[in-house]
Structures are given as C-alpha cells and as structure tokens.
Length: 487
Ligand SMILES: [Zn+2]
Image (cartoon, rainbow, N blue to C red; front, side, top):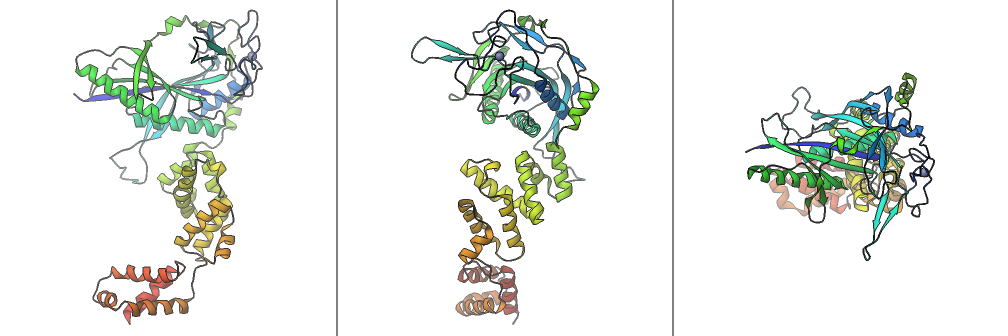
C-alpha cells in the first residue's frame, strides 16, 4: 500500500528582548543559576505580571511578515500543569484568542514539472500558518549524574517565546526542513531572534501521521520532541514515518502519543500519552488585561518591516539579472545578501560576484566553520579581484590562487598580484614566441591537429599555459593558435 506523509510543525522561537516577558529580569544566557530572577518570575504570591511591549512588537512583526491576520484584541491564558521547573504551577500563554492567525509562507520545492512559460522559475509551495502566539518559557532542571539529585535554575523562567503553529501542509521531511529554514530566515531578517536550534533559541516539535494515498482523512498522529537540529528534524520524521507504516501494514493502529527523538540511537521512543487541551484547564489569566492592538500600531510595525527574503529574492532577479537559483541562495540570509550587494556596488559585475560568492567564498566559510560576517575576505577585496579578472589583468585560474592568498593574509588582490608577479601576460609577441616553441616541440600533435583532430587545440592551450605558469592571456593564446593552424 502507498502512504502519504502529513507533517505539521510547532516552533518555539525565543525573542531577543533585553528583559523577560512579564518582569524586568535580564534574559541574558549563561548567568549563575537563579541570579536573573525576581518575585514575579519566581511565582511568589501577590505579585502581578506586566507585559513587555517589545515582545508584542516583535511578535507583530513576525505575524505581518507571514501574512497573518492580527487580532485587534487578544488574551493571555493560564495553562495549568505541575512540573518542578514551573514555580507558579501554570504557564502564561495565549490560547483561545492568540495575537495572530491564518498566515502563510512559501517554500521552494523539488519538482519534476517545469513551468513552461518560465523555466527558470523555481516551483514553490504555500504552507499555512495556523496561529502565532506569545508565551513564557519555563525554567531548567539540572540532573546530577552521580547522585540522585536534581537542581532547578529559574533564569530562563519568563523568557519570551513566540510559538508558530503550521497547518499540516507538509508532505515530506525535505518540505519540513525547507519550512523551518524559511521561518528561521524570516526571524533573522526581522532581527527578533537568533534562531539557533542547537542552543535552544529555536525549538521544533513535529506532528507526524501517514494515510493511504487518496484518503482524505488524517491518520493518528504522534508528536516528536527533542529535535535540536535541522538534520535531526528530517531524520526523526523519516524514522517515524517508517515506524508508523510498519504498524499499519501489520494491521495494528498508531497510538496518539508524544515521542522523544534519540539522536544517538536514531529512533523515537514513547514518552507519554498525548495530552489534550482540556487536560490543561486553560482559563483567561485574571492578572493580565486583554491586549489591544490598534490600527496605528499595526501600520507603524508594517512600516518598520525590512525587505524580506521573498522580496529581496525577486529584486535580485530583477535588478541584478540573476537566475532564480542564485537569488535564492544569496538571499537566504540578510548578511549574505548584504555582502553580495556591497560587492556588486563596487565592481558592477553581478553574475561573476554571485558565482564567486556561492562557489569559492561559501566553500571557504563552510570549510572554516565561519559565518559571512566573519569572512576573512571583505566585499571590497572580492570586488577588486573580480575587476582584475574582468580587465584581463589576471586569468580566472590565477584568480583562484589570489583568492586563497586573500583568505590567509587578508591582503588586497592588487597587493598579492604585484608581490607575486601574477599579472597576466597579454604581450602578443611574447606569447607568440612561446606558441612557436610549443608548435615546434610537438610535430606529431601538429600533424594530427591539421588532420582535423580539433580536441588537440586544448592540448596546445594547456602547453602554452604551462610554460607561462598560467599567466598567458587565454584569449590571445587561442587567437595565436588559430592563426598558426590556418598558416
Ligand atoms: Zn523576574
């Protein structure tokens, strides 16, 4: 039987505010345990939470960037449960009336069917966003490996989170990965969070089910937790799909439950039965007034939005004449897009700049584990390198050597070319002498070339390049060899 995979994702993104969501405590990571706490986030009796305006502002930006409908009035609710890292015995979240609903974002997908009217257009798929709401984070339990002791650190209690719930619109692990990358990219563009999955500031739970192809009813889903990297999200979904498939093919039923991904073992394990919303006894938090967002606030937030990935990508195609693929890679992060535009501004060579950044530069950064912001080669120097190639001062091959040298020394390409004598030889007489020499040294090859074996042209170009240590202008070499052949 053929099955179809159904995936919905819940993402918790930490918002980069200076203080917590309902008190003035610092959100700074890494302080000594329980030093960033006060009576409010410790859940002392008689204290009152006060909503941090910046949390609303940031969530509003995200909601607008993902085309959500903004609630003019939303509410905070208490989600009741007991756990030692939750001193109040409830988490303040939004439930019935979240700040935003009914949004969407588009992801690039693999497709066999090319758009005939525009073969360059990459196929995209729209993923629905059910809702976005604000809530507070819980504390952290630290378990002692050697003794039966657990400690509680409440520094994280009350750190602001934005939960983004998707529709069950994804049909493969790759689509789930593409959705998460897009979401993170938007969060980073907006500057409202750092979206770091490994450090826990961008967490994802996946709801996964399968159903026979053609069925319009959803199968029973399981929720997978503990997904701490993009790679693990895709792996865990793949594992879970295979597990559910086996159960269904055996004639048994999938149990609705929460499962924990074990990255070391590469499997999911049952954690607990899935709790329903009514288990939490949600009710409006009487300590917080309804949140009212007026038109002026929405208009101001919309005004303050930066150019977002989709718009930037479209502009790169339009303004710089880039293929859709290049534009997609270069706008995946705002820093990378800025780097590209700074380079092009100086050298006015949009496509070569794209090629060098996507190829050599990203290759270098990957190998060194560096971000674009920490690139050892500045946009200024890369632009100058491209100009040297464009003017014929150095060949493309020599440019690779200069690039490597720039990465190590940080020197300008002009300095490196001058110091190492790498300038391209465009002196026709000098090259002609070498062509004559190579011609004389290889009579057999000359005979075969004259007999019509055109492939040998490459051999002769190679020989001339070798004897000039790659510095001969390839255009002149080709011209001279063609003349020689015609003689
Ligand atoms: Zn506090």
